[in-house]
Length: 227
Image 1 (cartoon, rainbow, N blue to C red):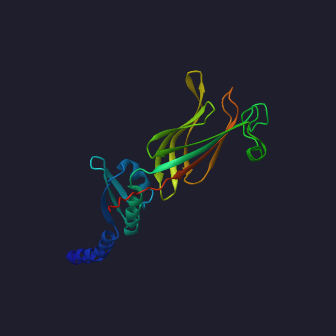
Image 2 (cartoon, rainbow, N blue to C red):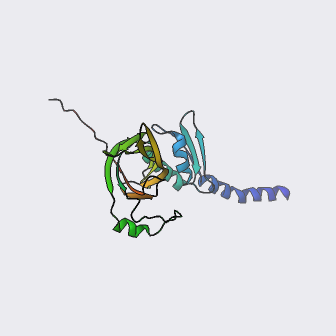
Image 3 (tube, rainbow, N blue to C red):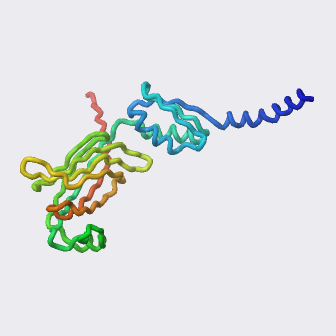
């Protein structure tokens, strides 16, 4: 009787075990262009609660275990992410406002109506600049003929979200023989979209407005023709 019950229990359990094993897939991917540590966090965002990612830093590879639909999505994501570093044209406009005119900040440094200020106020100084930077590299925009410059440390680009990570945006002002940092921050900006940063700089610097627009540059392939 016990043997029959054991056989019956095993018979009932087998279909569920089969369905579980059939519903989970595993794939190993070796990256060619990017460090696995930079891509793994993005892949983990797409997993189901039962999904797993294991990273092999020595071989620059990752193993993903999850449902078939997730595995298919991960493969497509890696194909988009594991590419050579892209180059971006970072264009910027710096608008400097007079400290004696209407300010976007009260005396207690709290923000007031920024929309009216940006639409109605006129800047006392305006400078423009552009620099080409690859993912993971640094660059600088010099707002000539002003003493201001913008140092940029560019992170990675997410082609699915069309967003680029700025590890550091640092506005500097040359004072005598040194560069004074008057504003510094991190940001995640949308590619191809202009973003405005309005800041009440530290005294004695006036308020300013910084516009940033990162645009991905297409790869240019040159084919030589032989006569």
